[in-house]
Length: 296
Image (cartoon, rainbow, N blue to C red):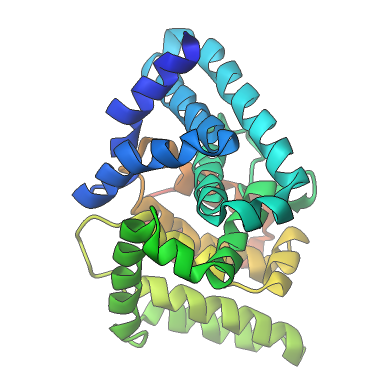
């Protein structure tokens, strides 16, 4: 009965919280569960995020719903990571959807004080590995994704990406200032190019910065798809420059905090980054701090 409650809540409530685009809300409400009925791991991912949403809405029953969420997520994740190759061949749409839902789940679950979102126990988080893998899935099964049940999702996202790519990345003085600092400090050419690449990817998202309208997850999370593995390694090693660049991701994340599952993440991450930096590099994140209105 609890699973039925979670499924009902997903379709009638949670499905509306992933986007304000009516076509995407319809996708999450109707099409996504249909995909889940053919792939139990994707259905469990929906039940897991639904349970976390209920925990958010019913704080007196939080522990019960969080335990339900963790159970469904753990069972699904174990199955997917053990059978990824076979699942990709059988149902790439379901794997793609599972990866997206897992990223939502990882942001929505109760966070710890030292949580840096992208890393867990010194390693890149499983959700980020899966999420970055969605790019590979698109390359592997582009025809199926664009003509199957994910067609609406892919089409809307594609139009938004195309629009963003038409916008100029110049005229971002805060990014220009950061780039100047990075060029002055980093003398090793290969490492410098890694940082410059990460900043260029971020400039593409900041091209939307003047847009006061409703931002969608893809507008921000696209940066996590675009940065290199080498940059993530430097970030995992908590290199100061990498942490500073990640700090500039926080104002972008704030634009998504109309979604319950991202509430508070921007300030949490920036405060965590601030705590990891030395005194000199803390001055480098002045602009993100001002945008969030945060002071230590």
